[in-house]
Length: 544
Image (cartoon, rainbow, N blue to C red):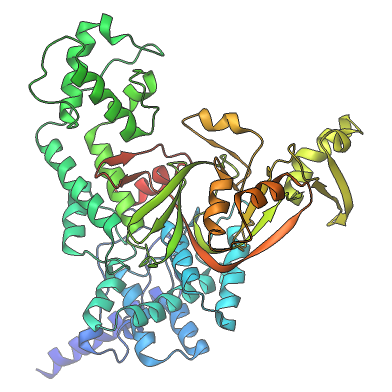
């Protein structure tokens, strides 16, 4: 028996030595974990064990954390026991993969959490330090995070610490809190059918009552039913515009597709162009963001041809985004959905009015975040950024010395070796006659535009990142409605004065900017939009 016991002891020592040897030389590609630190003094009720079966091939993030760095961070920051245990559980559950970074930049959850936390308006010094770091990284061109980069590791761990503190306040109930720790940030790829079962089992969301999430989840079940019944057939796409009245074969196939989408009554099976078909085409156009004129374009047919399996994945991606939506304020607020090219003025769950917008073009993407609109600027100057001056203005000046004069611009100084340039107020100004400020590190704001004709297009990603409004005066009237001084005539006069004037609002209005390519509108209609910034395309390879 002594010999057996001795052999067991030797085997145990070898196992421990191998464990510490592996952890002393962490690899970026595979999860690394110190078993002792992963379960340090953690109550059984709060412990999430190390999740096995996750590697660089099926993990949500392809960066992995050395658990020794986690322990050093906890010791250095003197993080309290329960919070430290929560952070350990968070990374145990993820097999120590990063939550907020991949090798291509921030995860969507990092930006969503940043926006959510901004809404809380915490102004502590610790918060400002992390926010400054996040701002620098977000504004870094071609950010390529590495698992061994101290700056990236520190930011990753500080964000996780912030999340634990946030969830501790948000979910006083321990069971709810640890469900959020376990499930808010994806940790593993899986097929769409498994994601549907997973989300049903783990319905974790930040908001207590999230109608956006619940309505879209119902539509997911409807799409799943369609998939189980064979989905839908594709339609031929060969020309820019169809004349369906002269194409009975197309009409028959189109009717079958529209029936599958629930737009056309099952009784309309003939090859004739009927009133119900015309109505169904309008409904399909509305669902995909096209002009409701019954014109059957190649673009609409391509949308109809997207397989139901792909639409299911699109909905799952957007449900993941909606998990991070806050409890919206009872008072009015502004919500922007970038792919929809729409701004909504809402109160609780109802839209008071909406308007078309123009967002940033690719390479100047409008960023997802939240803020507080607190100022209106009538007849604004356009203060050009260094990037615009360097990339656009200087090349024009090299060809034409009078370019600034011709564009109603002036030089006011120098900064960072570049001229400081602004455009004078007036009808020529790229900001139009009014802009709306909600302070943020991305220098994004709402504004008017002299290029009104761009609103006639279905796809409207043309700006440098700021958001152009189709009806800026309407928004000004709404924001100033409680100030008797600002009548319609006074607003018109200020917009036309060509003299810049700042007006501070008596009460700031919350602004939320989102990126939803699938959602359910207030009429209960499932909406789809193009993935204009390819965010869906990036995340699909990490979720499925």
